[in-house]
Image (cartoon, rainbow, N blue to C red; front, side):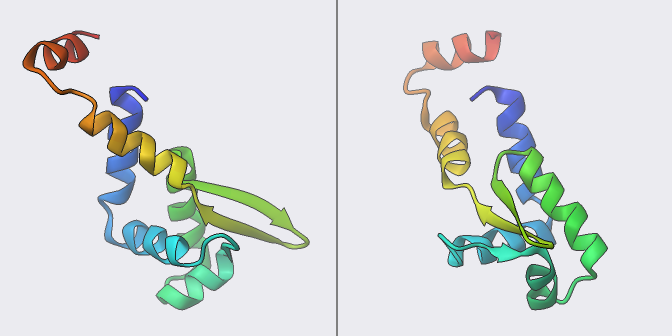
Length: 102
């Protein structure tokens, strides 16, 4: 993971509704939830929730799968692990300076 992808993921999670949606989807692993159900449970209009889920998906934090007429979203823990791994990757000042120079 590079710095831009990490910033995108952290930015996606920095919005309260998206953070709530991600946490909800983590709690529903491995099955996931349909977008409409996420919207209902968080009391957010469906079109607004779809936009939020799209942001999380583009940030690499969600996977989606069409099931009949619904899109079912699941938290992508591998994406979250990559973010955390990037944040913890630097163990010396020299490694930090090298990663910033990239």
